Image (cartoon, rainbow, N blue to C red; front, side, top):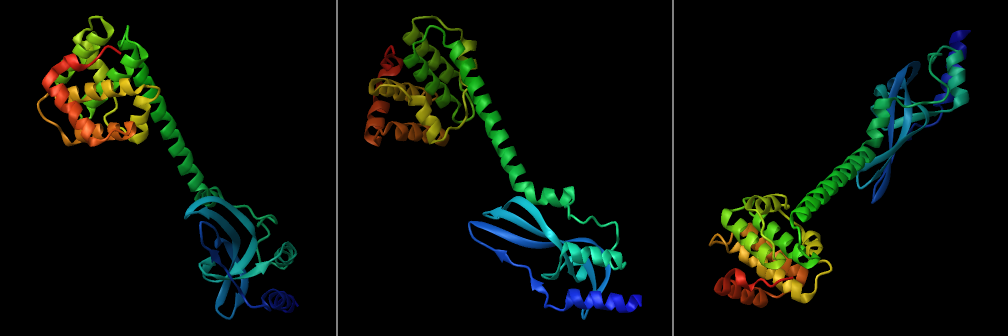
Amino acid sequence: MRHLFTGLITAALLTSMATQAEARHGGYSTTEQLVYVSPTEFEDDDGPLALCHFVETYSVIFINFWRSTQGYALAGNNCNTDSYYDLSAVELKTAQTSGMISADIPSEPKLSIKSLAEGFWGLGALALLLLFAGLKIMQVQKRKAQRMALMRGATPGAQAILDAMCHAAKADGYVAPSEVEMIKRAAEQMTGESLALEDVKRMASLAEESLDLKGHKRLIKGRTKHEQLDMMRGVLLVVAADGRLDGKENKFVGGLAQAMNMDSQTVQALLAEVVDGGAGTTARA
């Protein structure tokens, strides 16, 4: 009698053609997947069928952001296939009652932590990126506050010029003694106060080694055209202080000029001016 009952259940469940799991691609996509749960007593023409979670994973540009189970299914090859048979809650209960599926299987499908993690890795990666970016911003702000504290007596304009000079000195990854001397001389000229050489060296060491265009724009934010000209003069004094222009220094000067919308002829004229005139060309800001 049990064999007849089992056969009727199998026939009822497997009368329809197996459904094909699909994946829809684009900027936003939903991917269907079968995840193995347990063996069963069911078979089709190709062999034993396993109980699977029918899972949908939501992605944006191939990055997984969400995963959920849509129910149970039966599939061959331990769920490593695209073909499956839908299994409703009623059918699951009937199969459990007849001993075709283990009674330990919960009626409501729940994904394992591992399977859920595979669906949420995009969110985790995004969270890590945001955390890293936040920490970097905090570090940049802390270093800037330390630099500003060392520029005692300087006006906001003078602070901006000295800060740009410190970044120029750090651009090639090495702050040369001649660059420190040049920044010290300019700082004392603009502030009217004597600065310790170690303080100036510390200021330069706290600068960022490389800046993008946004970073260059932050240097000139709120500065007048006159102050921007003085800033470029100060930067050119620093990069020319050791008698050579490193590729990274050139890149820094180019980025600053781009942020200022300053053409190459003006930069070349200012470079000739500071080389001929020396540190005395940096005005009090």
